[in-house]
Length: 207
Image 1: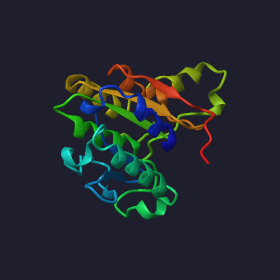
Image 2: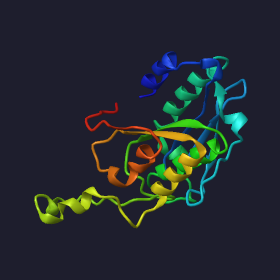
Image 3: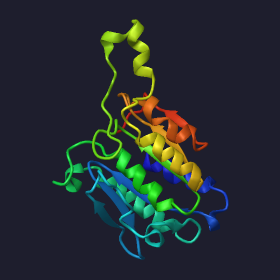
Image 4: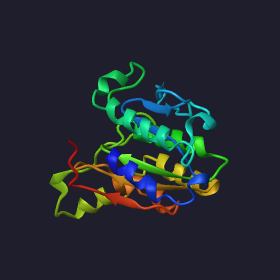
């Protein structure tokens, strides 16, 4: 996946006016910064009240001037996730805090316009925007099957984030790279309302 992201850098227009930042997540949120040397990681464990733990000038790197730094950060991110245990925190429950990572990215871009590419490998299960799978096979081919295909009205985080992004001129593309349930019905508004797209890659295999 990192190789694919790196390959797209060649096709981003107006590179001299494009800044890129990398935020990842497991059960905590990780911010990648690079100030001339080896990329460093800032970990944020408060996934229930997420914020941008790194100032914008330190996280965002100009694509034309800092291409090598961006690629080094992407390589560092890939190597980190070979061993998730290094970045697990006692402050957060085990699970995916994808919603908190998205909220952090939105906070980072507030007061500016921008674009977020949000990659999902599993359902957001902990922290801000946590969801529970509603995929119940016993409801297949019954009148209640449609209840699994509408947004979860008990979780307002994604519609709230979408409304905020519209005001702040932030667009979000969602890449659901999983064979499991990620509750796209509930998550999709962050793309639909911000002019983004949802890409569902159900047969992807990570090796």
